[in-house]
Every structure is written in structure tokens, then in C-alpha cells.
Image (cartoon, rainbow, N blue to C red; front, side):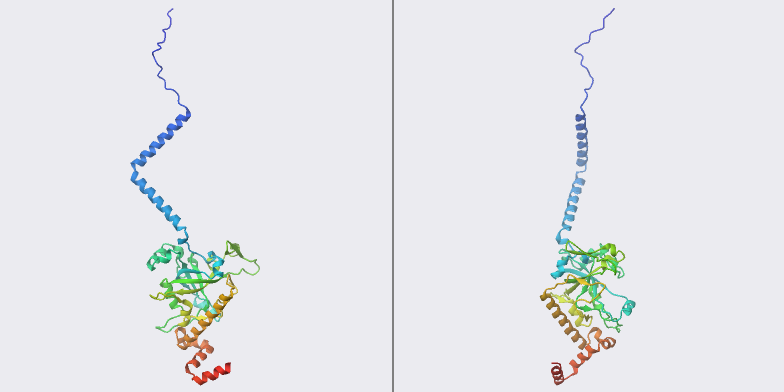
Amino acid sequence: MASAPEEDPSIQSTSKPKQSPDANARQVIGNSINTVTDVINGNIIASRYGAIASIALLTAYGISKTPIFFRYKRVSDIPSSLFTNRRIIHGRIVHVVEKDINSLARESGKEESIVCLVRQLSPIARLLNRSSFDFMVGISPSSQVNKGKLHDAKDLLKVEIAGLKAPPFYHAPPGKEGANDWLKSLAASRTSVSCTLLSRRVLKPLDGTKTALRRENNNVRIDQTMFNAVDPDTKQVAVCKLTYRPGMSIFRKDLGSSLVSFGRANVASGMHIEDPSMPTIDGSTALGDIEADVKYLEDLGKREFDGVKAYQGMWSIESIRSSRPDLVEEAEFDINAGFWSKLWRKIRKD
């Protein structure tokens, strides 16, 4: 019987040795990195510009969140301390809130405040000119007022001009300025204004409900569960003194004084018109501020009297003059009476 041939020790085994799981994982990762590197190397220009664009976008986003771009979008966002300390914010008038003729007829005899919609400007936006401002508002639908509807403007401040009440409705003769025409022209021109915050109106809760006011981080909020049916933009109004820069003047002028002097508004009984449905809060109680308010109202009264004497604006309309016989008679006496008549009247009053 023949024996099996002996195996030649010089012949080596050709079978592949088995690799460990760790080695397999490293090989997969290495191949993936090589693939990504090849793609990047093949598209180095596109990758570079993509990285630069990403950095630019992230930088722009970060800068937009800094204070130089910050602005208040609602009156409820303004801290109470800014009202009590009478701070100034800057903006542009974009609309004048008016009631229709039927509403004015129903509320005849009731004092109505003069209210504007103002877009508050961030520090950087204050540097923009009119065309740049219009472009910025144009790309922000929430900053636009469509057909005069307040609820279409979601980030505009509702501002009441302090110390004034709206003139009564009247039909201006041809060639004459109508009620609020001049103020609406300022809004159409997007006139920049400085607003001194005096107080805020807050919608009063309905009878039978608990108080709806609450404070969060020094801001006044209204319990939304109680007022879901009311547009949130109408729940708070800022009462302010406004100044503007007429024409090419470098000096600012008080807007309320201009309205009264030229017969475009009446003087109210106080810095704000009393409205039981929207009482004011956050007003300053400092004696100096109260004295300044009294002096301001006295100045407005003098300007109104001068406007009546000069037949300015609405005071040239006979129906308006007949509605204020006390003021008109006093103005006409001041114009027509002689020195001795005025002196005797003064002595009698004293």
C-alpha cells in the first residue's frame, strides 16, 4: 500500500487572514473620508463660496439681534419704566387712525383723541432716508396698513398725541384744508418723529371678570384668555408728546403746538382724554412732571386762542366757530375792544 506524499514545507498557504472588526470600521471610515475629500477637492470653489456665504449669513443674523437693530413692535412690549421716566423713542408716522362719519355722528359731543400709527426705528434705521425706509417697510407686510385697517398692521405702535382732542367733523370748502388733512400729509411723507412716553392706555376688562392686568419683566400684559375676541394691537395705546422737524429745519418742533396753532386740533381738558374703557397707567407722579404738563396745556390754550383770532384752519368755518361761542366771543373782544375796555374788564375780573 502506497503511503500519502509528504507535504512540501516550502509551499506557503495563500488564504487571506481574517481582519478584526475594529480594522474593518477604520477602513470604512477612511474610505468615507477619502470620498468626501475627493468631492471637496473636485468642487473647491463652490465649497469655499458656500462656507463664506454661511459665515456671512450667521454674522448678519447675529448683528440683527443686537441693540442697534432692536425696536418695539407693540405698545405692550415697552417697559413701564420708560413711561414713568418719560423716555424718548424715535419713529416715523405711517397712518392716522380715523373714525368714519357715521361713528362720529353717533358720538357727537364726545371727546376723541388724535391717534397715529408709528413705526419705531432702531438706532441703525434712524440713519435711513425716506426711500430706504419705504423699501424696508415694503418687504415687511406686517408694517403696512391696508385700506386703513388697524389689524393689518402688526408691528406699528398706536400713539395718542397728548393734550389734544380731534376737531369736530366738518366739510371744508374747496381749496380749504379738511380735518386731519395736514396730519395725514405727514403720514404720507413718513415724517420722522420723537415720541416722549407719558402714559399708556390699557383696555379695561369687561364687567364681571377679574382683573386682566399682569406684569412680566417690567412690562404690562393683558390676560389673553379674557380678550380673545379683541385685536391684540388695540389693547394698549401710548400717550406721547411728539416733535417733528418741519421742512429743511434743523430744529424740532412740537407737533401738538403746530396742530393747535393752525386750527387743526382742539385742546383737551388734560394731557389725555378720559376714557372709562381704556384708563391710563404708568404715568409719572413726580411734581416736576405734573407742573410741566400744566404749563404745556396752558401754552396750548394760548395757541388755540391765537388760532381763533386769526381764523386759522377750522376756525375759518362758521359752523365750528358757532360751536364754541365762549372762545369766539373772547377772541373777538380781544381783537375789537379798545385799551380802556380791556383794562376795565381786567379790573372787574380781579
